[in-house]
Amino acid sequence: MNLLKLLRNPYFYYGLFLGLALILTFLPSSFRFTKTDSLFTFKHPPQPVITNLNKPQLSTNFYILIDNDTNQILLSQNENTRIYPASTTKLATALTALNIYPLEEVVTISSDYVDGKVMELKAGDKVTIKTLVAGLLIHSANDAAFSLASHYPQGITGFIDQMNLLIKKYGLKNTHFINFDGLHGPDHYSTPYDLSQLARLAIQNSTLRHYVKIKSMDLRDIYNQKIYKVNSTNELLGLVPEVEGLKTGWTPEASGSFIALFNLNGHYLISVVAQSEDRFNDTKILLNWAKENLTWRTYQ
Image (cartoon, rainbow, N blue to C red; front, side):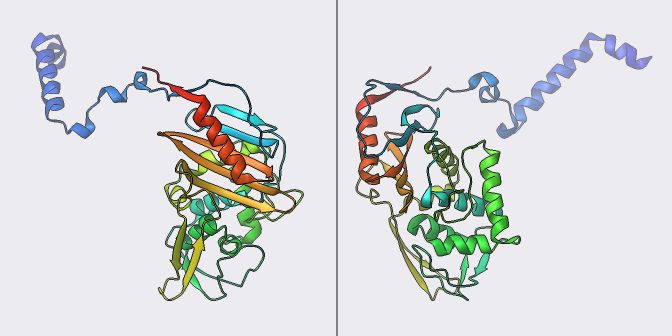
């Protein structure tokens, strides 16, 4: 009965309202609702606008150029045709390793690995996951890829399964991996479009994005006694200021491939060239086309 009388009393609601106002006044700012909490504050990314639709002439017919923020295809040819990805595979290797291992976890190198380009890891060396990822991304080191894969509790096959699960999770239906370093195999394939999407995913990882921008570096074992000198395989780093990575690839069967990350005055583009006779020049052609033919429309 007393509760019923209380609810009928208008002063009760006045006091309740005043109390809530006082609580909100002294509530820490980090707990307050602001306009940014509203669903209506979504900011549309700047929209790329193509001013000239003429395609440039490349040495390859397999390429794509996308705007990273909107995922809009700006320029492409045979973007959904299967190609051999070669060492661009290592973006998936690095992402898989970064997903399953702590950066400072120590790996004891189980054996020498001499196929392809290596950073000269030797059996018994002790290095961190971070060191292996750095060698993989800067130097395209196959022995780093081997060590990351063989360190997995379920073995190399289990690690490659994780690479394919990563691809499947993000809906890249035209990509399949049978190894960790991109050496040729008929069932190891991707497409320019899928590789552009792998790159979009990769640059969200701060560790990966850091290392793909490094031109050269001295890596060390955990005892700070052994040095592994690594140099980027990306010949455009330091020469073309807009280029901030990403990953090269080459095998006799795949020819040249290159995934590039461009920064055009704060607008990020990703290009992929595959089966290229001159992957770096083809990439520069795509960059120059973008500089000459793209503007961005900002939504208010």
